[in-house]
Image (tube, rainbow, N blue to C red):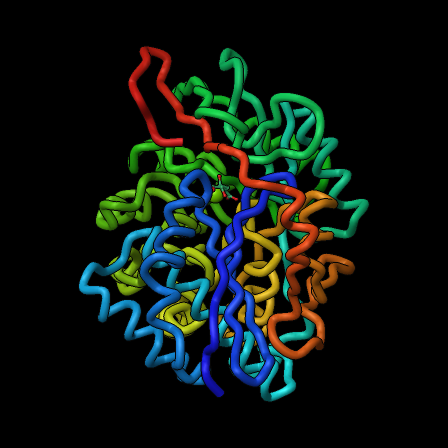
Length: 402
Ligand code: KDG
Ligand code: MG
């Protein structure tokens, strides 16, 4: 079998997605997601202008060699644009291979290691009572794990909290909006949220929280310590992770488990975090982490150091990534949890998929490949729309992490 061609499509059925379809001379095709929130067109160009011409005529079964060709062969290594593009190719090739062998993808990754994939949903609210209602709504839908975020008194808007009606979507149409931030107000308020959630919902529910890189390590240590009585499943992205050593300081002060890595694109972003056991969950995905090929290796390294996976699964990861991630989650031994945010109805129609959710767990489905399709005709009705993540400033105007 040979790769005959590949096509990149950018569409916006509610938000922007970049999709790669690789076609073979035997009529089989595979799909990969190449979406990089707010930088979609850069990855589309990287693929069509620089990668697709190099794929023609190659054997799609050579997933390892093609991955190395695109990674080592480019000379310029890593970076979110490069690694998202490589991932799209890698996931599409694994999809072709599984389809050719007429088996669901998880069978090529080790087979089933569990009966289902536990996922957490997002409960957001403008205040503690609204967040509490959102947690209750997740329990009604049988979620066993919920991430809780809420507005902070004294701040007009907060990350993770929808501004208007409807579900939360991190990117906003047009140029970036601006949020205001105060770590001091956040640190005072957040323990009150979790105290109330434990009083209302008891001890069994898994509760998670995302700090979104906004704290210094010592502030993160303080928050983790304050949250210990509420035994969180994890505290996510407590501090920016470019300085991996910074997590030593957090670890010295708290036993609250730490998850990090949704912005990582290589195992080299997490080597110290893993080998020094500075984190408990690695959030890197098959999308931004370069595909299934390197994620298998990253997960194996993590397994040796008691680190589990907790793949990023926000709305800017298309259903193709969700499908591929669920096969990966089902197969590896050190799976921890999978994030889930519902896509719009239009997105689900553009990407019909085999995965299903029931009683707290996802199933990737038994369709050969990763089980996610792409309706190109429908996608053409939703052209690209400029959209960005908001930027974040401290009360005095200093640009801060968001
Ligand atoms: O692209 C960025 C979003 O996916 C991110 O803001 C969502 O932090 C996030 C999360 O944990 O899902
Ligand atoms: Mg996050």
